[in-house]
Image (cartoon, rainbow, N blue to C red):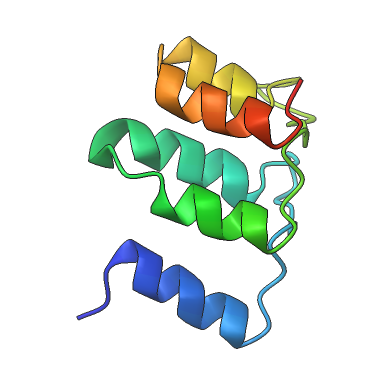
Amino acid sequence: MFGKIEAAKKAIADGANVNAKKDDGETPLHWATVEAMDSGSKKVIELLISKGADVNAKIVAGRKKGMTPLAIANMFSNKEIADLLRKHGAK
C-alpha cells in the first residue's frame, strides 16, 4: 500500500500538475500543508516544492479565501513548515 509520499511521487511521475487548482484555487501544496499538521511530515511539501509548486498560490474563494500555504502553516502554528515555505520564497 502506498503512503502519501509514494502516492505523490507516482502522481507526479504520471504527469500530475503540481500547480493544479480546484475551483476555489486550492493547490496540492495547500493540501499538503494541512496534511503536515496531522502527520508531522514535510516530505510531500518538499517534493511539491522541488517540482515547482507555487509557494505563494492563494485560495480565491470560500472561507479560506486569500490564504497561501504559508498562511495555513501560520494558522496552525507550524513553525517548521512555515520556515520551509519561507526558505523557498513564500511571503
